[in-house]
Length: 159
Length: 177
Image (cartoon, rainbow over all chains, first blue to last red; front, side, top):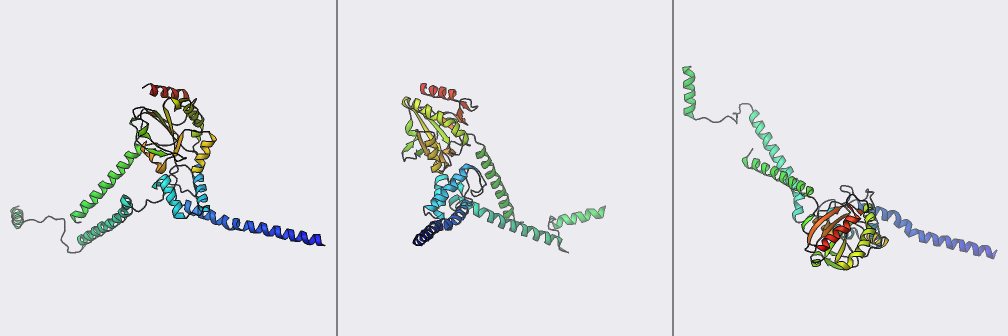
């Protein structure tokens, strides 16, 4: 009876130990994968342009993902990891250029282009509406001098 | 439409066309193969720094590689073997590791027993300066600091890029210059 008690105690303790050691792995496993994918989604390997790291299947990208995982396990934050990749491989690894210096053009120009397009469209529509308005003088008719008009009238009468 | 808007739209369109043209031109530039070799400094995986311009008087072989590149693996044993053969004759080999994980790169160097200078291409600067288009690529720098050709692709016994024999001949030619 005493042996059975010891055996039960040993089994319980072993199961408890196994559960305790598995706990962090279970807790960390899916989280760290999600975290790796979340960061990888924002990075691009120069070898495979236009393919984010999270879906790229090349060896280079697999290695980079391992690096992200290792750095996360070392306790590094997303920003630190992104900074490491930019320092190591250049700013082209980012999905969007960092908003600094000449790069600002990439952010400003589309807005300027859209605004300019709106202004051009508005002016075009306005001009078109004015031309089509009943009784409106045709805007594209060149103005003629009084003397010239009189001369035309005179010549018309002579015909 | 006011005249100034017409001018502005015209200027912007011309600007975009020029930017696009310059982008295309830069993309179409071929790898460097002649003229003064672009200077660069590189720090090895062990922390040793090297400056290309400080190697004047020596023949330098710059090999751009990556651990994930299969053709690089084909030429790696030959490069190491040749480096050992020529290192006492004034030839320097520089391995430039392009877009690579440091762990994978170190494992690669260990796998092939590579002992010549090797370091990561931080920010892909060397790759861009030589206008490289892929890996492996190898550049020959003469004693005078000028480039004397490049090899796009692996150097193997039967390679169509450059055979091992042609590579050795090239080293001999550069040493004799």
